[in-house]
Length: 102
View 1 (cartoon, rainbow, N blue to C red):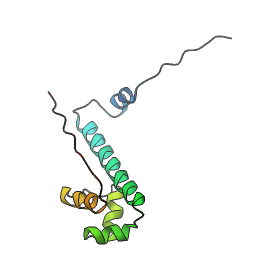
View 2 (cartoon, helix red, strand yellow):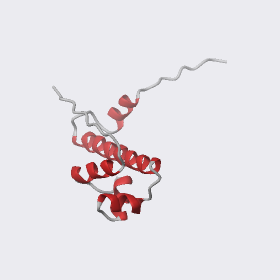
View 3 (cartoon, rainbow, N blue to C red):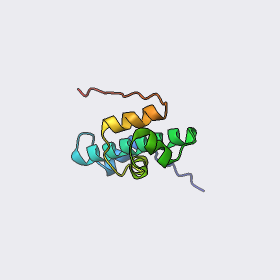
View 4 (tube, rainbow, N blue to C red):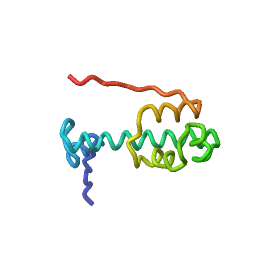
């Protein structure tokens, strides 16, 4: 019985190969969409941790339940002001990281 070795790839290598290299329009769109998904999931998790419904959070923020749902499901490009209001209503600390490209 021969032993086959499997080549492993990093997520970055697979993304580069199948989505595109960093800096290309397709890769930028993919990365932006991924970040929105992570933000939506963070909002949802914080809301659930606070035991709030989407409607209750919407009332605290001053938006409709549908807007909270869209944020959580990354179906809309939200204004930064709205996102900040959501996290403030959730009494959640947020931080942004800016990476300067050379």
